[in-house]
Length: 634
Image (cartoon, rainbow, N blue to C red; front, side, top):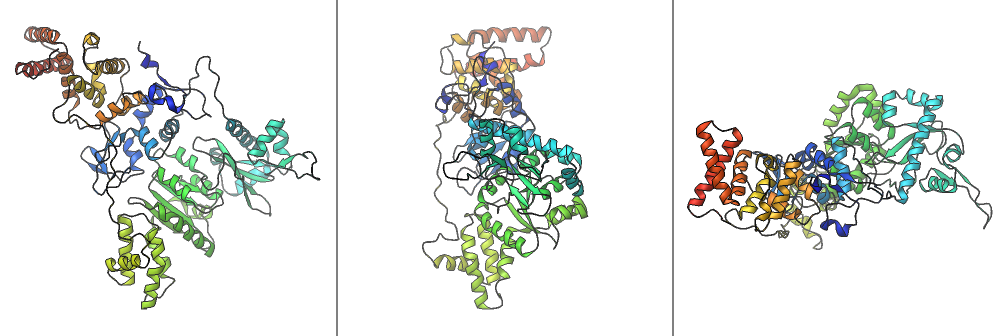
């Protein structure tokens, strides 16, 4: 039995990742991720869907192409191959699997990429404990635990509290929605949470660190501590969860008149309002293919929209939408709609959102703005008119370019020269915040129509006003190429390399050829790698190239195999089987001739099976190539 069958991802320092079979894990994670889970994860993942949510892909034959997200280019050289679940850029050499893309594009660690991909396909990441090893913990483990206990406590209290239950009933929520969002109630008491969860000094400190409690003021300098009291009192509670479903904070709505109406957890080690989105965890649980998001302003808006079937709604947490919010959104999908009230405050918030969005504009991304009728919010509107009508409103939302130009045009008189000049001047700083590309050029053209001037003259005039500013018409920068190890030009390389390449591109054919017995006696470069590949794939077949590569991630040969995966190999599985058989037989000339004679004899006497016919074709190919001296001999 090969050791590789039981390979798992150990928790080791980054410095040793490239010298072993195991991978780094965050300190808060205890245990190991089994290899069989990685195999299943890659088998379930759809790399086209994953990359397509970040990069606009266009289908060309059996593959998908786009401009590479890892270097600037105008001619697409980035290719995604669904059959192999692999991507490769012929311009800069970037290549990898779905996990590799998340690590490279989203700057995630290996474990974070595994957890992200697992959440997309509906899998829980299992852990295996090291025999005799102590579980690895982190100071934040206890903080997550106390927050989850608090969520359970508030949920239980909701079940026994008419006050909390009556509120949610009055808002039209059903029991399934209450359970899905883990809603709860914190009663009107100063020490409800502290007395039940703060049973020791250490636990009381965790309540303080997570913002669940507040320390009482000391009556005099130097006096000892006077205790703690609950932050949330007489409020219905909305737990805020991270990507793994762990509670990281709370939002609480007061039930009677009082201020503030909504109270959020303070900034803590786990909770950062400018980065988190309420309902994002639930949205990702509701759909494996989250293609768009709707950003609203309130907790109840999110909850009611999800109940109505608009399960892609999320909300900021009492703050304006930040660039961090947007960066996170566009890692998940390429379509975003902001939903705001139609009053003055709503439109002011929408304009702030637009200004913060400009740096995130890219070709292929859609950002839209939806304004509700006066006196309505998403909660009331979806309740009154239903999902279909509400989604029709989303479909009619203004694009970012439409809203930007409409908003600016309302501030000037475009019937006058002065007004049109003012319009151009108002637009200039906004255009400069949009990254260079087709979108900015097209927006400049639309502005030129309103200003009634040729677009080239307009962009030249705007850029000329301050020579320190970058030109509005982009100048293509020299392409920065990533170093890529050279591939042997011409031909297909050595026989061993041919065999390895076949296994990389078609790992499933390993079970159709003889085992590696006897290869250990062959003295050629690459033989140990070929032996291990054959043995591993015959004992543990895998479905595609990506699954094979993930088994080798972190090992010295990983990059070599990944680069072979990036080479073109337009051969189907049957042809790959013949080539692999031929390559293996060429390593054993005597065996090859003997086996050829056996199969020819059997063909004339009793006929051959399908597998034997493929093997015979491979042997005949090698025999013919050997007759003209091109077949390598040992």
